[in-house]
Image: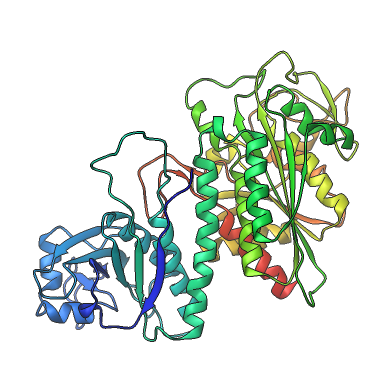
Length: 523
């Protein structure tokens, strides 16, 4: 099942004269009190880009919007029939929050505003966005943010309904972004890039939102491999026999309880021409459904475990975007896939599993399965050779407890963790570095093996850190690495907000792409 798509283009026509179904403008809330230029506290302020629309309303636009309940709060959407004052039949004001001091709104504010507006305008085939864009060095990032927000806010998973839904309005088909010069090549390049990036995020969302009975490991591997081959990537898929023969004990142990056998998908991008010689490995957790295995989860909320492959979905889609963006650095993606099910063939608490790198792991909880398949994939990435290893996974509930549903946890090489944090901040996917304390590792000592997968006392304290400590055991000395725990940010169960819709979010595709491009540019 795939989502419908939205097309983007640039336009430099006066927004008041555009032949579209709706024109979106930005409004700020005024909270700083009266002064000579801004008016009394509590009034609305029109953002740059709304001048011609305001003129058409004879200066009464903010007054009319306020009567409709507009406050300018972030993400607020207010619709106003124009009654012929401008060409478009509808003006839509989207809140941008308080007016920034001496600057245009930040990229994430614009991204969320564009997403909220385009989502609210479902049913309108053609929409124009006339949002404030700076005219300085920040202009490319702002334009990219508006374009990404529009494409992601308009996302809707196709779903499985068998009957037409009378109240279900189709997403906006075409979005025009108002800019000073629609022919500017740099601006067009930003929009083209945004389309590639947003396309990767939408693909991730599609895979995450697919029903788990339709995306078991063999089917997921085939879907990724088919898309990757079409994109021009080199593809290797290991089946259960090859995994067993190759010594991938973690992947085979987790997958042996399901009738749908495990897979390991390897995708490689090799650039043409000169590079800086650096190599990047991306690893993503692909548990297509997680019951917990023998250590079975409670039934409440278990349906969300269809999203336990969000890391692998993000890595696979990121690799598709890399093939389109063509960064000058070699990138390899590793997607270990398994279904964690309880059965007579399941792996058990008490088992000792020999991993790809030869380390032996004592299993204490079969619900700590993600780290088992990731350990094998990370060890394989290091064996193949890499300079940087970025791994992402819905690994622990401890991430949600510690950092909530929006901020990912990052563990690993301190310098690389900081690089992840900076990349996340740049693209609107926040992440926060966390420690890997020695006492956490000591609590995972095993009497019978090299390490246990969790704290020997089954202690939940430092749960997120236990995952990072375990994964460190499978990274070769000298390889800079970062583990990005996206248990919270990868799946949104609340009401749509900004450019997030319900279901898969696509986190951290944009962070991974930012990191790859940063390595290509700076090593």
